[in-house]
Image (tube, rainbow, N blue to C red; front, side):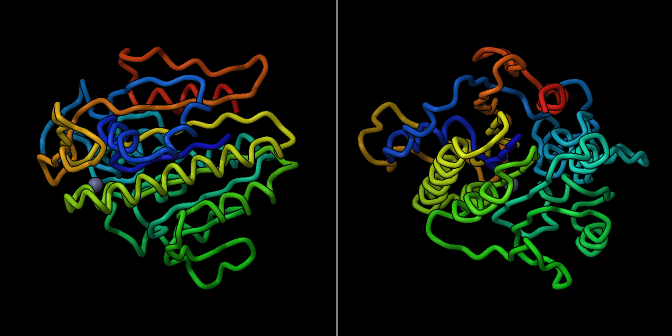
Length: 297
Ligand SMILES: [Zn+2]
């Protein structure tokens, strides 16, 4: 299974990509999509600065554990630890290889929520220490500890972001069952900065990454499910009626996360056991994704 997080990417971002880039065609390869909710609807104690807006650690932890986690924590509710997705896979699916490919620091919220527990997402030395107890079969991130060598790569920014590493990893995993998590993390960052040209550039990297996954899938021995989703949307982008052929008519209206529904895309070549996301415009909470995913891997 391949689970990919596009940090901060709301449906307005996809509309921007569509208006600016032919690579959007690669998204046609997904066979289902839905919109889902990333913010707590029942428990306002687990919120971002605004009660209905989430942040990446909480959202990634919800995705990883299937629970509404405490804000800014990594896979925690108050003093209770919840088993992160990566550990769950390692324990339950011993014959699976586990990979992580992200364009950010290994201790950042989304990668951290894959393998550790922490009261605060800022505890980077604690998070990195827990990395010692977790064995990736393939890992690419910024600032990996130097004691890690075989199949561990420090991420360096290149054209088309993560594509080379994804192809490399999927070549290594091609005969195995595996769980690979990918994060394109820079769309969120550029949206916080309200930098539209750089946001578009990062959206192009997202297309490139998706393309490289689909190009690798035919080489895989086992059936695979590929989910692309967002942890939240960032920037409250407003696309005005007169959007023509450029992105100049779209405007950021905030430098923070917003609480719009975000898209999830699904591809699966499993013959029988196909994951069914609810159709477009239904409400699907982010923590349900984990439960549904575990059923099919
Ligand atoms: Zn953010």
